[in-house]
Structure formats: C-alpha cells, structure tokens
Amino acid sequence: MFEIEAHYHDRKIYLSDGRVYPLGEILLRYFSMNFYDLGELFDVCERAKSELNISSLFCPADIGKCAQEIEFTYDSIMDIAKSLPPYDTKHFRHGLLRNLFAYYNDIFDEPFYEDSEFEVDDYNEHFVNAESTPVSHEEMYITEELHELRALSDYEFDSKKVFSNYENRKDAADFKTCIEQMTNEFSTFIEDIIRVKKIFMPFVDELCDHNSYPTTQKVIDTFQRYTSIVSSGSMCMGHTVIETKKVPYSVRPIVSHRWEPFCILSCSSASRKSLCLSSAATAVGGSS
Image 1 (spheres, rainbow, N blue to C red):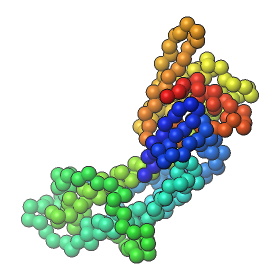
Image 2 (image 1 turned 180 degrees about the horizontal axis):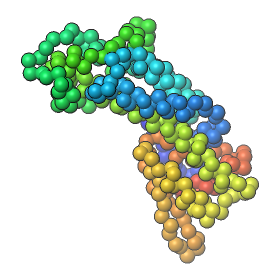
Image 3 (image 1 turned 45 degrees about the horizontal axis):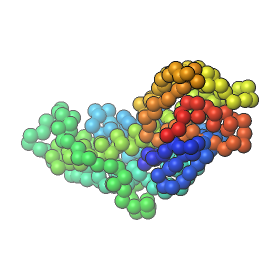
Image 4 (image 1 turned 135 degrees about the vertical axis):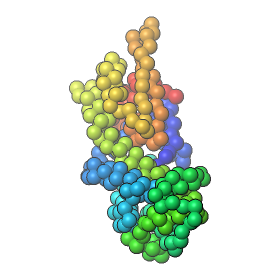
C-alpha cells in the first residue's frame, strides 16, 4: 500500500508514475509538517498485531470492537499519507478492516458443530497446520460504500467455532496472513515518519548548523554517528570510506528500503537547509 518505486539521478528524484522532484523537496515537506500523536498511532499499530491475531490463545472474544478502534487509527494514518508527497496523488480506500472482516464473515458466523477429529485443547495446532495461500488484504476489499457492510463492533470471535470447522481453518489462515500484512504496513509507515522527525531531521540540522555547506568530512563524521540509529527492519544504511588521489574520502551509501521518505533526498534551493541537504545528499549519495 505504501510502497513506491523511486530513482535518483542528477539531483532529481524520479517516481514510477512520471513525477519528478528536485533533490530535497519531498524531505522538506516532511520536516515542515506538524504531526501530532505519532507515538499513540504507533502504539495502536503495534497492539493490533496481537489483538487481531486469531491464532493466539489471547485473541479477545470482542475482536470486532478492537478492530473498530484500530480501523479508526488506520484511516487517520491514510489521511496523513494523503497530505504528503509522494502519496498525495494516491487514492486510499478507507474501511480496510471492515472489508476484510466482511470478506471472511463465515469464520465469525459459521454455526458451531463438532469435528470428530478435533480436540478443543489443540485448536491452535490445527490452525497452524492449515497453510495460507499467497493472499493480499487489498484483494479482499469489497466496497467503499462502508454503510453497506456489517459494523465491526458486531463481530465476535469463538475459537472453538472456527477451528472445529475444517473448512474454516483455511480461511482463518488466510485471514491471519492478511492481518499480518496490514498491521506490518501501517506500523512501518508510522515508525518511519517518527524516524524522519526524531532522527533524520536532527541529522540534517546538525549538518546545517553553521549556515554554510557542510564539508565532505563533516558529512562523513555525522553520517557515521547516525547510521547505527537509523538502521531498522525496513531500512539499512551503511558506508564505505575510499581513499583517492584527488579527494581524501568519498562515501557510497548502501540503501535497502521499501518506502522510507528520508531516502528520497530532495529539496529546493530556496533555503539554507535546502542547500545543506543538497550538498549532503551529493556527498553521501553521489549519482546513479
């Protein structure tokens, strides 16, 4: 949902949809935005991983009420994304959980009956043995007319009902896969925005501290201090220092990412911070 493809060349960022941004422009938009309650949004995203996990013995019976609060958070996160490039042209469909629950309605509403091979104490083992097929939660979206769907608060979870029904176990495994995808995507998105504001923004401020272009050595020293903090499950940054005859040092970053906005080093040349960003990006990134 939040994945994008971007390429950097000649101080410009090229997106797969044809848009082109000057180096640093997107990043400055993230720096200038005032995001409130990011920590609370992240906490809800992390809590969703356990509260919506129907394979867990601790999955709440009133799973629908939990999902309702989580969906409100997800809708808020999509509104945040919609206000920022490169997502400002993307159409986000709200009500993801309501659609997913409606698609797998049978695992919540199937009448209870006993399976002669099923032992209640081992329902989690039966669940694990039901392999999920490659599915995506976006493929399970039914309609944007959310009033046509059942309210999330009406859903309740009964593990005996779900896992004693052989046919439901497969659907339950697919549902769990979709929930894992969704919860990870939203959690990663918010976590990366927090990282931009609390880690990468101070990094740039330090580079621009003396109202001038940072030297290559300063970029290297500052970059070295921040790489250990920036590294995460969704992004890894590293560097190699190479000696040359003309330039004592050069840095080549190794970046692996899904969407991180601070990998899209862009900016306009209208401000001191923009100039420092451009210089830093050139020193750190070179061209490709």
